[in-house]
Length: 77
Image (cartoon, rainbow, N blue to C red):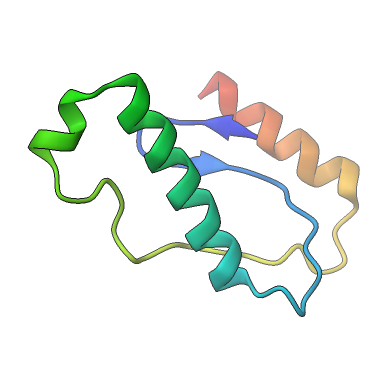
């Protein structure tokens, strides 16, 4: 994964039966929990850290190495 100032690029393999919405909720919940532990002031200042929205794109038939290179290239931008 690559963390950008306002978003994250991540390549994740997911069982379709789990559901993308469940994965997004899980990631946001865990990161919110960890951030609030590390920065207690967030508990008082913000009712929530994340919105309910998220963006997902599928890789289609693109080669895995090409997608990984794209994500890694985002560090340089």
